Image 1: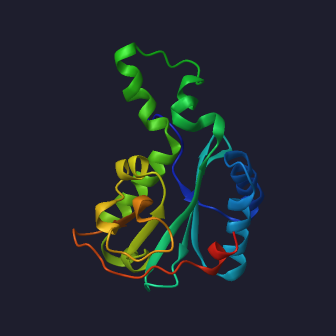
Image 2 (image 1 turned 180 degrees about the horizontal axis):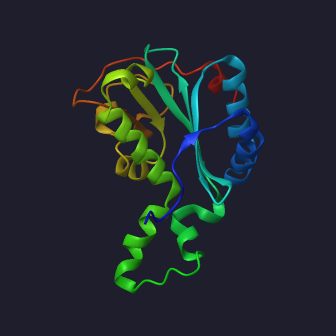
Length: 193
């Protein structure tokens, strides 16, 4: 039996209003919702992913095209319903009694954000064949290293990049072990925030 949220799927047009509501609930301002709208309008959105649970979008992330380097993408924004963050959904799910020693193992599959990022890392690191050309070569994220690092992103491999944002919070998801030396130019929508 599968425990936790449903499988991640692409966001369809009819879900865009629900995504905007999630972004507005998960962040203190509407900046992330405006970013998503602008990325869509500019044609810079590669794809958007959502993880549903019981008919609602519980988690979301967007991948957009970097202006340079070619073939790279950036992950932003990423959001989880505030009431479901940190495995809290598992705490509120009835009929699932576990002992104290099993609680942490039980709660892990209910962590929407971590689960979505691990699925993404699995695709980047494990896909070969027909699907590989559809995925970006590298995914850049600006965020908390302790969180993204647990999900396959690497801080050390991003330290030779030139970025308009702090390298102390810039991580990459990339096959191999090389340390790329590239200049990052984000989609124009990022400069409008």
